[in-house]
Each structure stands twice: as structure tokens, then as C-alpha cells.
Amino acid sequence: MESKEIKEIKAIIELMEKHDLSVFEIEKDGFRLKLQKGPAAAPAPVASPAVIIPSKALTGSSETTSAVPTPIESTPLKEIVSPMVGTFYRAGSPDGDPFVDVGKSVTEDTVVCIIEAMKVMNEIKAETSGVIAEVVAENGKPVQFGQALFRVR
Amino acid sequence: MFEKILIANRGEIALRVIRACKELGIRTLAIYSEADVDSLHVQLADESICIGAAPSSESYLKIDRIMSAAEIGDVDAIHPGYGFLAENPHFAEVCESCNIKFIGPSSRAMQAMGDKNAARVFARKAGVPVTPGSDGIVETESDAIRIAKKIGYPVMIKASAGGGGRGLRTAHNEPSLKSAFHSARHEAEKAFGNEQVYIEKLIVNPHHIEFQIVADSHGHMVHLGERDCSIQRRNQKVIEECPSPLMTSGLRKKMGNAAVKLAKSVGYENVGTIEFLVDQDRHFYFIEMNTRIQVEHTITEEVYGCDLVKEQIRIAAGEPLSPHIAHATPRLHAIECRINAEDPEKDFQPSPGRIDFYYAPGGRGVRIDSHVYTGYTVPSHYDSLIAKIITVGATRMNAIERMRRALGEYYITGIKTTVPFHAAIMRNGEFRDGNYDTSFIERVMSSGKLDLKSPSIRLRE
Image (cartoon, rainbow over all chains, first blue to last red; front, side, top):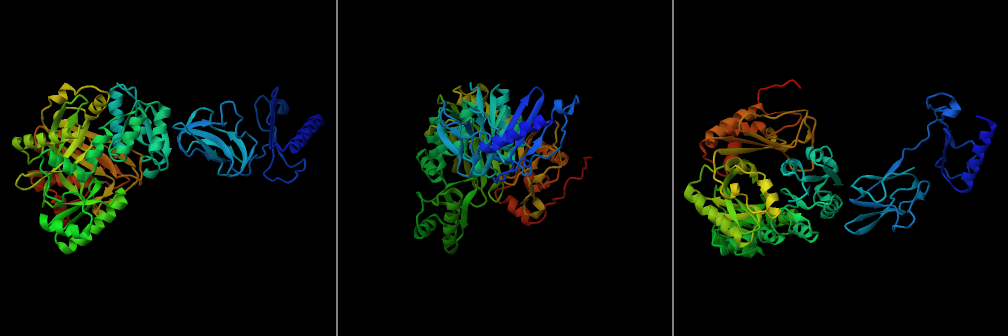
């Protein structure tokens, strides 16, 4: 990588620290960069976040291959699954803000979504702690028992 | 006619209902537990929704989740099958209040007949003979002793909220009555959440003969003859046949009319079965009514030439009784063997697990109602019924010989099944003579004379 790009990545990392972000992802003109913070909440030195840069521009090859095959995850993702049959809603009201988004920290009691069953709005708790890595279920769509709603790191 | 039906059941009956729906052009929604994700009915349904963990209490009995699935699936009707919520008046009521048609009788009629003791009262009122017994619930041990003395031993203590052969105890004298009374109440409390019991005279070695009722919502009701279900093991039916070898046309008329009279007296609609005990002198006594489709509906279908599940759906949709059912007459003879995942050589110990290889018999006059297939894993959480094999013949002996032939081809490996047990019964002299009652299986098993070796065929797997 060029020193300019390394400077940009350092700046991004510092911004992530400043705003307590765990994930930063950017894709532009064939260049894709994803930075993920490790589980430790301790002040991380610049070198610690794992950096993967699978991108055409950098490797110069016509195939997308990982330049640095660094494993991203040391811990597998946990799933928050639906305990009932109903319709999944990300927010408490149609124009409200979602309870959680990717990057949000949750504890066991954090309400992560609503599942509406038979006209009753049920608040669903995370029942686990970590950081939301992925919103799996689709807003306003039916979910069945055991269906994955979120993935949590 | 309905556009979409939710099947609130599993296994072979769920498949049976889906088949009827498909033939009627109705879309199907299957609900299932996590243990049934690979079930055949789930795969064949147009849509499916997982409603809970394996235990029935976490899934197939969860009314709220089933109704939620019904709402999401936008269904017009629910078919409850048999067992689970099929005879739960509260479930029928919930469907009614959600404007989803429950395919069966009204919750009111179900309630009237579901209480076994209250059903006896209805029977008496309708002039239908009942087994001599208590006038209602027996509350105390001293009442039990007094009533048993009056009826005369031996007696049977039965759970009022019971069914399916459970919550029953017999007593042949006063000392055994006391313990039977208490243990029946205890079992009833645990199994049905209701410890109330009543007492009936125990009819020694009766025949269990039941009558099929079909009624539409326009007041038209008929009976489709009888089924003989005397071949039972521990009060569970194992083999059924239609018509009964014991029946005469005179007795059929009397019993059929009594069945219709009783069902009419509670305003019954859709299909149901009236169960009687018949003693050695051909006296018949009402014991209970089943307000649902039954496992053995198949043999009535074969003999009377009808599709009872389709008729259930038509009736629920408001149609009048189909002419072929209103004017049905019996032709041919049919026998059903219930194939369970049990080991007959080890006292019928349950044998769940993966079916490594499954080949079902075919040919003329052989019907298989089964949800299993090669590679299917029989779960341990539910009943052990894996298949029903039904044979039809011009005569009773034809049906028996056909069953014997078909069982010899029925090849299931990986689990133990009762196929060899049924094959042995088909060879048994008393059964072949039509000379059996509810004590038959007990006697034949304890005589140790049943040859339970598996069929000799081997198929390349």
C-alpha cells in the first residue's frame, strides 16, 4: 500500500476510536476496506484492528482474491432467534428509530425488536451481550419460531 | 370453498389432510416443530411455518403460535387432524372468534361430548343404552364403594376428561377398588389436568364396535356403518376392520340409528364416531363419542367408497352432504394394521431413529397412509405410528390374505417395527375365524405362541 493510503486508514481508525465505532466499511471504485474492532474495550493501538483488503485495485489481478488472508473472527457470531411466530419490526412505531443497528452494543436486557403476534406487540430482548454484527430478519416480514433475527459478536 | 387451510398436526394425518386439500385445489400451510423440519408433510405443503421446539407442549399444543401462523398465512380454515388440539373446545372457540373455520364440530357440540361422563347423560336422554354405571362423577372413596356394590363387580373407573384409552382402572373386588379409585384419579389429574372419574360396569371381553357419523350444516346426518376395533393392546387399537365379523344387518340398523340419534341430540356437525361395547349376547352399550376424524377412518372409506377428509372440508365450507355419501352402501371388506416404531420382541418398546431403507408394498387392493421414507428419522417426541396399511378384498378372507401378502413385502430397516407382529396375527386361527374380542391380544401375547420373526426378504440397500 502507498503511504497515503496508510495515512487514510490510520485516520479512519482514530475516528472509529473517537466515536466508539466497531465496524467501518467502505467500497468505492473497486476498492473495498473493512475495519473491525476486536472484542476488548481497552484503548487499542493502531496496529491491533484486523485489516482485510480484498480488492482488484490493490492486488492488480483480474480476480478478487484476498491479499492478506487474515482471519477476521476469533469468536463465532451468536444469533438472536425468534421465540415466537409473528411479524418482525425493527422500531417501536412506523416512523420511529430502530431499536438497534449494526454496531450497537447490547446486553441481555436490551430490547432489540418487536414481534407482533395476534395484534400484540412483543418486545424481544437480546438475551445475550455483544455488538450487533448483522440484521438478518427483514422489517415488516413474518418470522417463524427459531428464525435468526440478528447476529451478534 | 376455502382458498387456504392450515394443518394443525403432523405425521401421517397431516399428509392425509394435505392430499385432500391438493385434490380440492386448496392451498396448504403446514405448521411444524423443530423436530419435524424434514417431515414429508412440511415438504409437500405450499407453505410452512416453524412454531416451536420439539415437545408438543412447545409447539403442536401452542394455540397462540398456531393462530399467529394462521394470521400470517392468511388462512380460511384450520384442520386439527386427530389428537393434539382436535378435541379441544377452547381451540375451536379461538378459531371461531378469529373468524377462521375450524374443520370439525362446533365447540359447543365438542364440549357436550368431550366430557365422557356428560356424554353418558346425553345418551341416556336420547334413549341410547349405556353401560350400567354411576349417575355422574364419583367424588369420594365411600361413594365409589357404594356404587360399585350396586352395579356389581367387576367395574371400571374412568376419567371424565379422558380418551384414547387412558385414565382407566379396573377393579374386581372392594379392596382393589380403593386403590384403583385413587390411582385412576391421580393418572387423570396428570394426563388431563382433571381428576374427576365415574364408574361403569366392566363388560367382560367385549367387542369394541364404533359407528362413523357424517353430518352437514343443513341438518342432514347419516352413519357409514361400523368398524370393529376389538384388537387392542393396552387399550390402544392395533388392527381394525370393516365390516365387523360380529355384525348382523339387524344389529347394524339398531346401533346405527342409536348413533345418529345421539349425535343429532347434541346438534353435531362434520364427522364423528360413536363408540359402543358389545357383549357376548350382542347387547350394545354406548361408551363415548370421538368428535374428530379418526386414525381408522380409512377402512370406512374403502368399504363405503368415499373420501372422509374431503367431505370434512366440504361440510366445513357449508356444502350439503355429498350424494355418494348420503346414499353410501358397504361393498367389500377392509382391514387396517397400524405399523408402529416399536419392538414387538421387547414388549413393544419404542424404537425411534433413522429409517435406513423403506420399501412399502403395493399392488391391487393395498393402500399405504404413511409419512415416512428412506433416510427419515422417526422422532422420539410423539406417538410411534409410522404407517397405516389397509387392504381391501371382496371377502374378509381375501382382505386377510392380501394383508398377509403385503406385510411380507413391507421392508423397513434401521428401526424396529410391528410389521412382524401384524403378520403373525394374520396367520392366527382365532383372528382368521373372526372369533376375537378385546382380550385377544393379551391372551395371544402371553401364550407366547406368536412367531415374530421378520419377513425373509432382503432388498439390496
